[in-house]
Amino acid sequence: MKIDFFSAKPYDKLFFDRFNLTYGFDLEYHDTHLGPDTVDIIKDATAICVFVNDKLTADVIEVLSKKGVRIIALRCAGFNNVDLDAAKKFNVAVCRVPAYSPEAVAEHAVAMLLTINRKTHKAYNRVREQNFSLNGLMGVNLFGKVVGVIGTGKIGKAFINIMAGFGCKILAYDIYPDADLIGKGLNYVPLEELFQKSNVISLHCPLSKENHYLINKKTLSLMKPGVTLVNTSRGGLINTLDIIEALKTKQVSALCIDVYEQEEGLFFEDLSSDIIDDDIIQRLMSFPNVLITAHQAFFTEEAMAEIAEVTLDNISKLNENRMPGNAPVMLT
Ligand code: NAD
Image 1 (cartoon, helix red, strand yellow):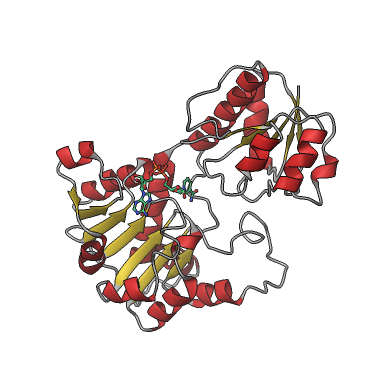
Image 2: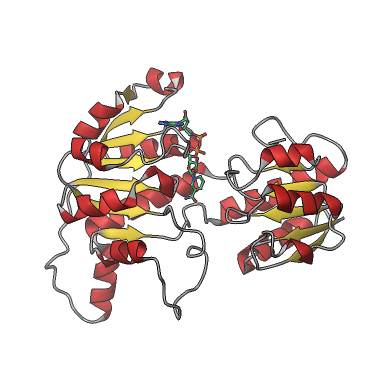
């Protein structure tokens, strides 16, 4: 069976080729995104494998089905880029990897928080230039600080465990509080109280219509002056223009983002020789207290191995008309 990959990077090829030794599928890698302009490059594929910025619109899915593609395998958890109704209509199965290493994302959130607080990114560069001065490098102890966690699912839970180990006091908010965590003493509070009392706020909930721009002018004004915000979830949770204002007034003392609402076309690409016409990210990058990484929180060897293994297993089972897993794996 042939599988066409889109948005494929060298690291995708490395992991999928390794795990494909068990399956022996014919894998063809395309570095381009999938969309209406690129769907025609698919030839003789039974399955396609796509990532977060590929566009599976109704017209693309119709072409896929005409070309005999029966399986869309997402090598990620999120599926906001797939028209699931069209997939059902054209009888194309859609599967994903619902969880591939919550610890990877949680550890990256902590790495960003430590970096922005203790300014190790600046210290690294300084020392390489034989500048051993400490001016401007002072941070604060995280021990004893109040950390607000929004979303206490797999990643939020892993993040809480790490921060509790640092001696932080945790306040949590989730629309579905976790009974196990309550049993272990986790303090769930109303969202407003979390905003008012936290020194650090980390977002670990999915993006939905209801929580789009959860962080906005109004909610920012409820927060402790000098709050630090960390977002490794989805860019649309933060109103970027509002947070730029809050950075300018110092209501927000530091911002760490691994996701950005306009990240498509920027993240995952080397644009070092290009002119970037997104003035908003340029403004964000100009702040000394903003740390941006390009959607790399998931990017560990363990997570990549899990993604490759589960994706190929999903495709293999669907190809044999077997169900690869329960509802979280199958989307149609
Ligand atoms: P999960 O489904 O295990 O947990 C999500 C939690 O958020 C659930 O407990 C849910 O009840 C809660 N929730 C939903 N809506 C909420 C709201 N409006 N307010 C508060 N809580 C809410 O998901 P997860 O595996 O922990 O992943 C969380 C998010 O992390 C994903 O949705 C994705 O956006 C993001 N993510 C980012 C990367 C990355 O590389 N940066 C990788 C994987 C996942």
